[in-house]
Image 1 (cartoon, helix red, strand yellow):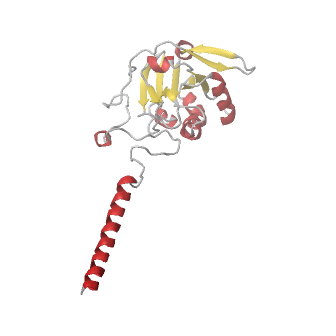
Image 2: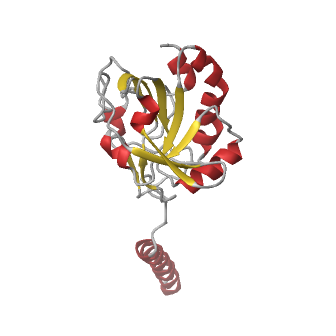
Image 3: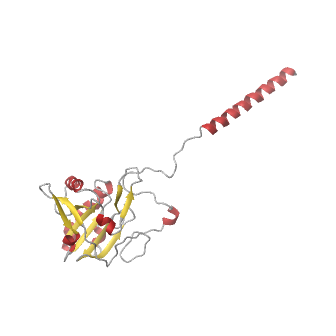
Length: 233
């Protein structure tokens, strides 16, 4: 009888000790898991939106539709003058102003978040290069791509994409024009560390006045293509 009681007590003690050990281990070393707030995606510049439940119905801004996506510039506004830079065929830095590009002209300006980034390199710029002849047949005098990169980066990117004179690749190095029209895109807290860049957009201006504005949400690519502008010309 005593032996049986001792055996039962030993089993209970062993079970209790094991349970305590498991609980203590779980408390001191909880399972590690990655927070859902941090997700790594390919560099397509399509980042998770804050308050997703409130943004499900956001649509890119078009010239005559209401959207929570906004900018300082709007259809009917005169583009602010600003200076862009680029490298000429001799590798010398040159400058051109918004006025030079648009005065008495029909001009397309489109912006990308960054040179050499995938969507910009694979879709946005090549689309305008491919459709440049059709756009110019519709009366467009100037097609220019703007990015908050320096002129040397833009020149290297132009060579990499094998762009000739179909599209001008211009540097808004300090982001002056980007801030002036209110389309800054702050990517400084992202893993790739791009800093403050430009939202993706395309616009059509006649004699410096905005006639069409297709502004994307951040770096999305949904309605700012060459094809989108061809539809309204």
